[in-house]
Length: 130
Image (cartoon, rainbow, N blue to C red; front, top):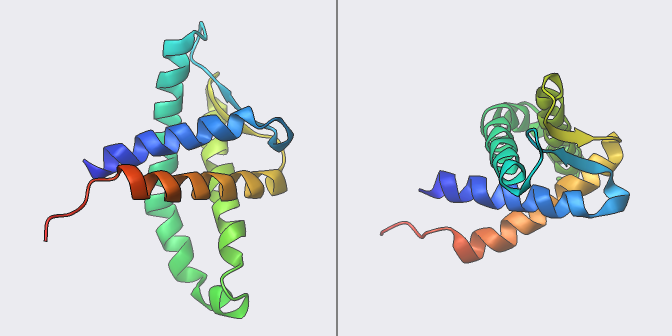
């Protein structure tokens, strides 16, 4: 259940970031591009982003542990931007998906997505039974 709530939160955060014009992050909906197709596209992109963060992000964070120590954790901003850019790269083969125009603006977008995920995660994610 927590994973599905995380996908919905990711989809919402990506949608909010796509509304911020200077970040140059776009979501291209499934054809014909109506509201339902946009929501489905956001959910699929949220799923891909969650899988990329879970699988590739974990491996990169373990391997980059010395860089975390050297940069006092600031490398996490670049890693999160890379994971967002990688998610956009995965969906470039299709006519729909996420488009990130600039890597460094993608880093800023990843920071905004992380903040939205953190805030909504505190509010919406179900608590584990103790």
